[in-house]
Image (cartoon, rainbow, N blue to C red; front, side, top):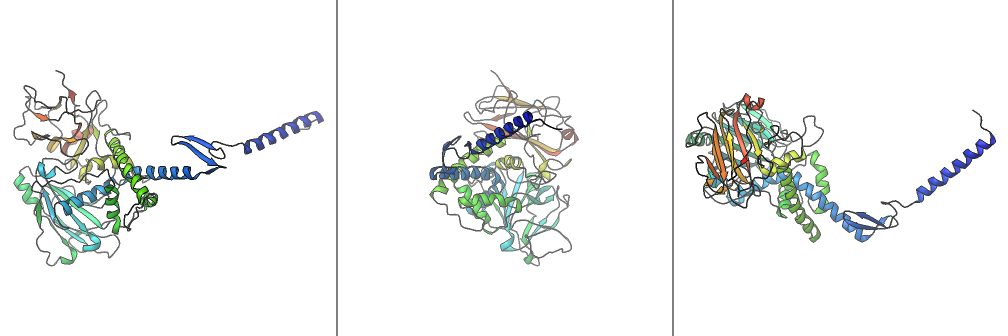
Amino acid sequence: MAFGPSMKSVLAAGLATGVLALVACSQAPDSAGSANEVATRLGALKLENGYPTKETADKLYDEMDFQRATQAYIWALPAVGFKALYDAQAKTLGVKNGEILLYQDLKDKAGMLTPNITTLYAFSFWDLARDGPLVVEVPAGATAGGVLDIWQQPITDMGQTGPDKGAGGKYLILPPGGEALNPAGYRVVRSPTNQVWFGTRGLDPDKAVAEATVRKHKIYAWANRAAPGETRYATVAGRPWTSAQPDTLEYWRLLAELYANEPVAPRDRTMFGMLEPLGIQPGKPFSPDARQTKILTEAAKVGELMSRTVAFDKRFAGATVYPDKHWEYAVMFELDQETPNKDRVQFDQRGSWFYEAIGMSVGMQGRVLGFGQVYLESSKDKAGAWLDGGKTYKIRVDPAPPVKQFWSITLYDNVTRGPLVTPQGAADISSRKPDLVKNADGSVDVTFGPVRPEGAANWIQTTPGKGWFAYFRFYGPTEAYFAKSWQLNDFEQVTK
């Protein structure tokens, strides 16, 4: 196509205008570049020819470190929960590695995150780097437990939900790296961390039988297998203790101590890289300066509140169990804490659980028909309001709950996440309760409130001025649970 002289003049003029406009645009100051001041949520940030002033740089670094630390708080919840429990057993209760501590009743479990009140617990710790491979001898019988790494990822289940299926057997836990062992007669697994935790529970309805069975577990070093000696059992005996993750500088000290002699998993390297400017490096002493201390202390406070929000006001998909009800799945992550297709870590999902609880296993995921446990939680009533210790509520557990073993409702303090303890004792009721009152059709009505209403046969006391949340546990869930043909009702406020 040919253009005449007049058309060429027009095109030339237009091209010149475009070039001038482009040059003008390239020289114009933009809001994040050569402007002298940028308005942000942090206030006005001042620049000098595009460079941050000393005041701006200091402010931005402080904010970067604070933001990183708040997210690191949520990230580290399972690891710090492990370390806090270890310190409680070793330092407060004086239990050594390889000794098994029994948690028998409410007083024993008062310092624990969301324990059940019905069954006996038994916990022990072991350092594979210091003490070598670990042997756990599991007895036959009604127990369920396993061994976990420092991120509370199960290395193996044991007992009813483990490969022994309740028949018992010997397990050999190997350290990360090192010699490969495959002796006959052992189930051999390798831990990704040096420090590991053994935990189990006795499930027999007869408490004496449950404890006798649990006490048959043996723990000892592989090197001592020819003459392992007796496994020592200790009891809490009602001594006060706590293992809740702190919201102070102590949180970061626990994390640093835990990683004094641990390998760092590839997925955690980025987070440790971001924590380095705050004085937290694996294998190095934790000695923060004044600036780091201030930021870490404030970040622990905010991080704890963020974790509380993630736990009780979940925003991730699929948390609600039944349409138009307020029961949620407490466990919403895979055993390795990654999505099934391995494209991301389930960051908030695992944070939600480990803010509230300790431990994880195949059985605790609530996916095994007839075995293991299901954990449903609720912090809101039927109207969607937070559960309030000063108000009265009721719930009906419909007939034929879908369990092979038993069900229970346990209330927890929403700040400490420990058992709600009142003058009545444990805020707990279960189908194993000897004096549980049932309706003619087999349903059970339970009332919750500070004062027992007239005619309330099954009543759990609450405390005015305190929020609470509940776990409903299905032990040995049956098909009706998975099919949702049986559904759990909401808490309904009782109006006077």
